[in-house]
Length: 144
Image (cartoon, rainbow, N blue to C red; front, side):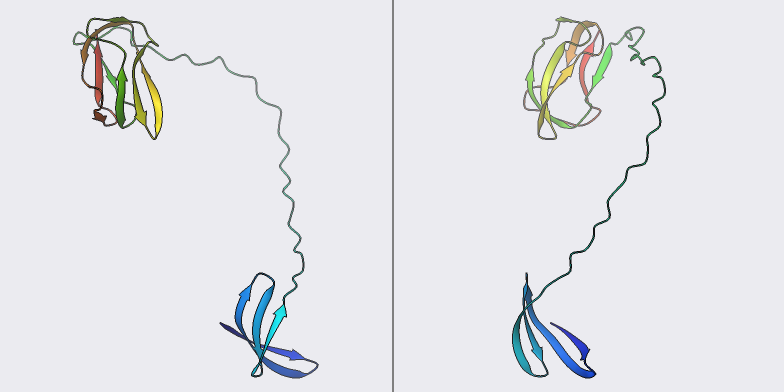
């Protein structure tokens, strides 16, 4: 395995470590094999000291998400935020929805996610079916 040279009381020894597991080692010293127990000194682990924190700054007014001012003539296109698989659709064409209503459930990144309406309106088109694999950015619904 590894070879070392040690000098003890002025005498040089050639040591070969054959096997080393846990505290036990098989070593060969000048042609004679020994089974030895290895003792290690405990290493001092440095303690992490976090820097002092400064007082928090006053919070700014929370930002509000800007909803589209008006729905385009051809309808608002709801896009998939992540790739995944459609598991359930809760709406039909013609249903009136409000922002935040559940439109569908899909699996993405091994988790079930609800897809919510981003605008108020009427479902004009549903571009997916249960079981469809969807890509990020794909149009899922058109809301008019």
